[in-house]
Image 1: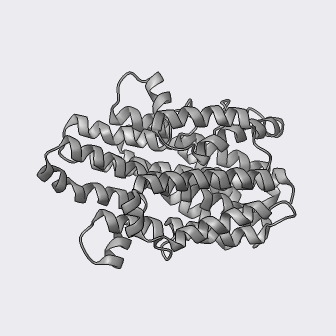
Image 2: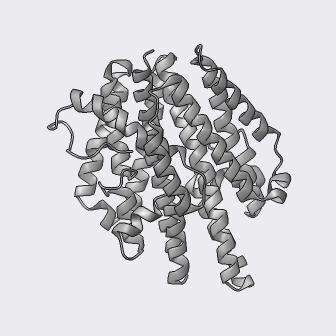
Length: 371
């Protein structure tokens, strides 16, 4: 398969997964903001949301205040935010159109319809009327896209490159959700009286679980109250649950073997080593060494793996812009560079040239390629 084709398939899947994860985080924070709490503490959750996406600096430059309505609009419908849901859906559609001959008609129609319906829903004011309706719809369309992909695609290289993008993006986002929420709760605990902090723990860890569709899974697996140690164990080590880090790395390790080539030895070795290290970890040891420290190291390694995969299989990334953005994001969020941010921004440069030649302005709105 040509690197350009693999590149479009990989990013089509990543953008779809990213739109879903953004909707999940927004939905959880919106529901949490409805609980009785101070304005200062409510704002802390939205700051954490921006920190996850490494967009705090960009948001602050365009918005003098921080409110739930403004953050939701910025993350969901802002055309100037290249990581907003609407721009992710547009980018997924553009990548799918560029490789129309490599995907099934059913998959193309699903992705294209999602993009068209998203524009209509936002124009109708769904975010002002009922944000949760839009978030649930985005999650449903992402589920539908993966279901059509699994139900109609031949298990060839095209299929595996799409899966590669999905699980790389999922591992990155799951780690960031857990890391930022854990840090937010620690800040809250130091700012509130101890009894009050403990009384709010249930709701916040429940929000973390709901943001990754893990609330019912937690109840089924542990059959007990929600405690941070078990939440971390579920999201990191529980390999039987498809959104955990262990499960995502299981998938990545298997997929790499299906698309290996003469240059992919390093990517295979990095995937195998990261998979082995996570599977050998124990939650007690992780917590004793510091969950934030462990997740920070994981994010660095998953970012390096993403860069290696791009170098070995896809269109090479432009390191200068990616490095600048990653450094800015790292300074804003005190986290390692996000694969979902730094790679997509340099990816937009390489994709925009080919897509601008193959797509007319009448067929898609005139705006920067989403990153």
